[in-house]
Image (cartoon, rainbow, N blue to C red; front, side, top):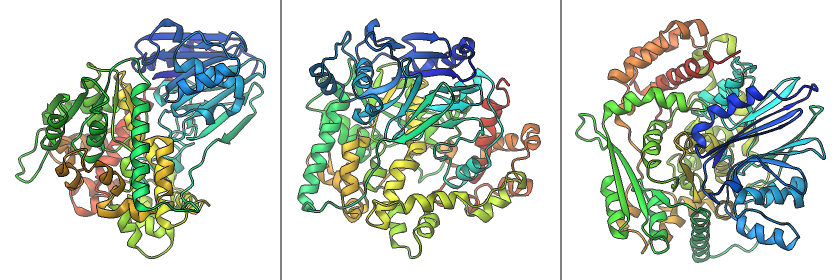
Amino acid sequence: MCGICGELRFDGARADLRAVARMRDVLAPRGPDHAGGWNDGPVALGHRRLAIIDLGAGSDQPMIDPETGCVLVFNGVIYNYRALREELLKLGQQFRTSGDTEVVLKAYAVWGDGAAGRLEGMFAFAIWDARRGTLLLARDRFGMKPLYLAQNGQRLRFASSLPALLAAGGVDRELDPVALHHLFTLHAVVPAPRTVLRGVRKLQPAHQLLVRCDATRTLSRYWSLQAQRPALAPSEDAWIEQTREHVQRALDSHVDAADVPVGVLLSGGLDSSLLVGMLADRAHDLRTYSIGFEPLDLPTEKADEFEYSDRVAAVFETRHHKLLVPNNVVLDRLPATVERMSEPMFSHDVVAFDLLSEWVGHDVKAVLAGQGADEVFGGYFWYPAMGAEQGSPLARFARHYFDRDHAEWSRFIDPAFHVPDLTSELVDDALQQPGADTFLDQVLRLDVTTLIVDDPVKRVDNLPMAHALELRVPFLDRALVELAASMPPALRLRDGGKYPLKAIARGVIPDAVIDRPKGYFPVPALHHVRGPFLAHMRALLESEACRNRGLFQRAYIDDLLAAPEAPEHFTRIRGSKLWHAALLEWWLQVHVDSAPA
């Protein structure tokens, strides 16, 4: 797990090594174990390494293939690297290291542009091939590893974070109005290739981009998810048994692909508890980590899930760690968390992940987490609500998911940034792509291939990697996701959602954990829009920078500030509209206003 960056010139000039060095410096927290660089004429590559597999210097990057001369920078982990290595050895390839980085390089030597489709894991990589004069950029199927791009007529730059590109300079920092429409309609989701800045794009998940020295580009998709029933549908028992096998296989691959201890983030919910239960007899001295928060003075409010995580840790005798965070620490941490955000993120979980990652990162380099299970197996409350609706697919989806309708967005955003309802067009087009049998198949496919990329996948890369902590998500294993997508949605949504996971959890983890109501992780200091939290949002939105930016219509902001906890000032999935506006303004002040021209 690492940070990568680089530049390819189109104008005949040599690559700007100082710009690449600035990007690499910003990426330093992602890879404290080694810093590397390579350049040759129009191309320069930079790398920061977090050593998880093959800890020796032989796997430092950039890595050069002595047979082909190709140069690789790679961020991520390839879970099937051992099997690929054996296959490549039989095909005549020779290896100098035992890690997964060289496997990516040799896979390209044998399969060329088809190499990405052979990889199982989370990854973003760049391969410079001097023989062809091409730079190949690729990103994993679910966008677990980020890859940001900035291109003009003279050059292309890429990096593992948006702030790294800004540090290099020369980026168009004007706001992208279409991305703003997505951001405030889909609760901070800006689907690739856009970002909130016109000058920065991101490579789409499951895609690769081939860039030539004359600036021509070829973008191609190497994988797509089908959400259809097989011709011979398995019985319910067979579906459940296949789920058990696929989860175990994913879990084993995620733990085995490491030469360092791997822990588990144990929230006390079904997903993380199941990971612990299925790992317990396979992992020696299993380490688990739980976080909770100080409650506010509300008798019915619960601010931690220690009741359940303690029970799971006790049953499986893990080496358990608990962190209780006072509310003042949450508020004090907000500025640092915003500074670490690669893109604006509205979820309060971002602060929790920041605090949790810093704490856990002092003990281990890699952890497993249960993120993705709700999207893959239908665990959220809005799925059955959508399914019960009437109307077009778009209307059914929007009524339960969109943060605000287009008319409200038009009252919120200044007319200078207005665009048509392009988010509805994007969602409607995505829902109606072929390869999905029913409306709920369409929704679940959209969630796992597009929406999940920005929430929660983005935050489970961004914040842990800011503390050199690799977070792995077995529920986003490609084969497991494909299995779930082939199931009838009714099976996944049964008994409040995630029925196949609940079924395989029986007899593995306590029934009290399986049968508990779904929890939404509480961060009380931010859940309630009042006190110092409200005061800071008011200061941001009334600041000179915000007024001069002219992004928001003042009447709308004034209404939010006058009654921040009014029911109409929360979104359909319970987000604060005031926080959405304040967070974007805060992120722009921190990352964009001070960036070099």
